[in-house]
Amino acid sequence: MKQPELGLKITELRKQKGYTQEELVEQCNINVRTLQRIENGEVSPRSYTVKMILSALDYDYESLQAEKREATHTLAPIPSAEAKSIHSLLTMAWMAGIVFFVLSIFKGFTDYYQMYEDTFVFGQAGHVAIKALIMVFNGLVLYGFLIAGNVLKNHVMKIAAMLMFLVLLGYYAFDIASVFSEKIDIEVVLLVGAIGFGATGIIFGISVLQSRKIIGGLALALGVLELVLAACLLLILLAPLAYLLLMPVIILEILFLYKVASLVKAQL
Image (cartoon, rainbow, N blue to C red; front, side, top):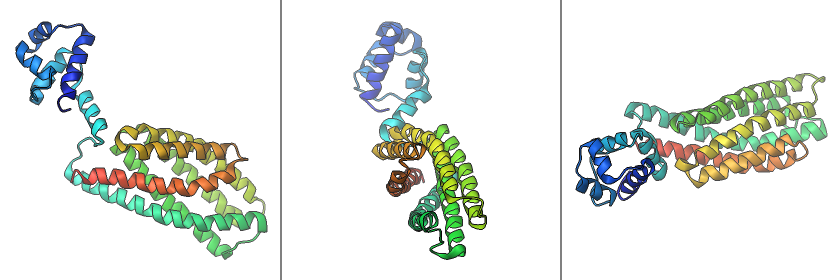
């Protein structure tokens, strides 16, 4: 944290503890004039001086660093070798998102014709291929969010990504099975998907909103849309609206992963 924010923070913490400047300097071995200049933002103290002052105020230095990262939209330090690997995986994830976006258009046609025309518009093999490819590329996007959750120290995002991945596997296994079994109606498949993705989507949307201090307005927009999309799925009757929201949501997910990848790249 830079001046004058650092000085204001120290002043705030000192007053919260009820210390005068004289009482504080007695505990951290610096003179009153130095403390005054720090609090007034006139000098930028060395890290060990800041740690000494914060220790006297019972405030964790790492918490101050976390506040700095949130204020400047930066990540916690990542080792160079690890950052290179993470950046590659995140790049793969957002690129997979582009393929997922295109495949989702074809999926819309396949679901429509299967439900309302009782036919496979791209043939049975084409139908299965589209669903299998969507499962793979959607899975890669979710893997990207699992990595992003780890990078952003967002445990809820990691949990949400894993839960959505399990729902994804179950849903598409059920969906593909419906192609070969007349006992499984497409309506039932879509209902199961709406409930599964709706429930996990609520958690996922909340996790995205939690990252807005680092990612900014993009996280806010994506988080809100994820929650609206999830609500539409859970309300069932509004599920058709969810299909309309899906495309902008995928675009924002791609941009989110690209943003995190860019922040990681900045550390290379």
